[in-house]
Length: 438
Image (cartoon, helix red, strand yellow):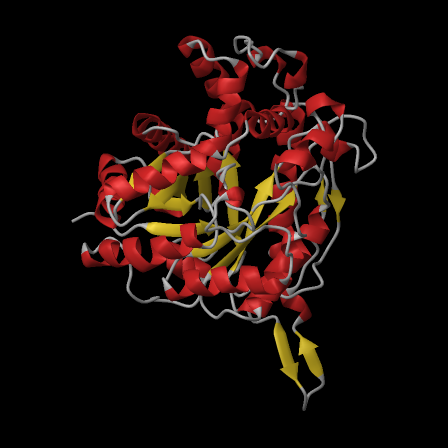
């Protein structure tokens, strides 16, 4: 029997598809009140998803053309502070996991350790930290730097950052807080210690000002594709958000990464691999194909080119839009793992830069599956049985319909097949994922 899937929702105000925010059935983005995010998260919790996932960027994209004008004219590019949003969502949900992004390049270990330990306490053990290195010079310029750290250096910093955060979470033992009012003893000082982290990038004494989190340590999420990323994630992550545009690439990544997990001295089940996937649900396959065609008709190539420029940290405005895709693989200073493949594939197929921009804006290199609930369930099952994943991060093309249609129609089909839970079996995110409490 095929093992149950783990499912996460990529929480967004505009959807992932560049045509999604313009779709007639989509809510207009720009209302940044809590209600939108609360409704989507509550729907995900009713569907019994493992977690919701909040991405982040620390700048308005301004690499394409050297300023933000083109970006803000043509696609949504705003980001609430994910930690603040996660805190709010923890108060209106009870069981679903809550993951937010914090950068290892533009944060300090003590801040991150305390924030996520706090949310883990407030939520009763449902917090997850998506540890990213950030990607662009635009972000660097908001944090006292003129350019982003190079790929190797920022991952060296990230490795030490993760070590320091884990050390801070471990400065309190379970049961250290006594709260003995009669005896006047708040804590057993013998169960609290200094972190005493002294490294190349960080010197952190500790202890943390928050007792040990309910999960022992909040779940660590890492997203990426490069070889350096995979080595770091194999040693540290509990959940990996993978980019696998095809089933074949998914199988290749899954097998290679799980081998690295074993080489790091960990059991395979200790790290769940969830590639992103964009489901477009229709009443029939034909209806879903019609929705997809409509979405693609709403895509502006410039939306993809501005996104790619910021993600690669390389300005594509210097090349003609109607000319061939330039082979800029050696120029990528941002997200290397994803865009090495994107550029190589586009060059091989002879795409123009504008064609690539439109194509990338529609999918962000995630597989797009359009069909009836049965068709989509078939595809998810096919990936699982092929050994390409432990589940998926659902990347809605538009909201709210791209989310609620999946919950209302695909989730029941997965449950009917025994591929997804009908009830939560535990209270913490680690319980949902089936990863051990450290």
